[in-house]
Amino acid sequence: MDATGFPDDLVQVQYAWNATYDALAAPRSPDTTALRRRLLRLSVRLWWHPYWKTVPSVPAARIGLRQLARTRGAVRAA
Image (cartoon, rainbow, N blue to C red; front, top):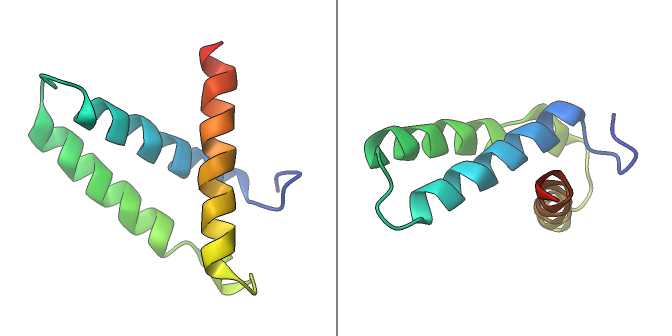
């Protein structure tokens, strides 16, 4: 488990979702079909992860997860 309470695999999936979304949003993405399929698969993994059954406020936790993945992505890019 991460220090924030999120499982590492969940944070990694959210980070991959963010990266895929950013790649799809970029102008002239090379293979939009593959990116859309990947985004859909990652969305399903995020939505149905068993962690969400254990938190009292799922919407707030989802926002926290997105923020954590974004900040980790910024740290990795630096």
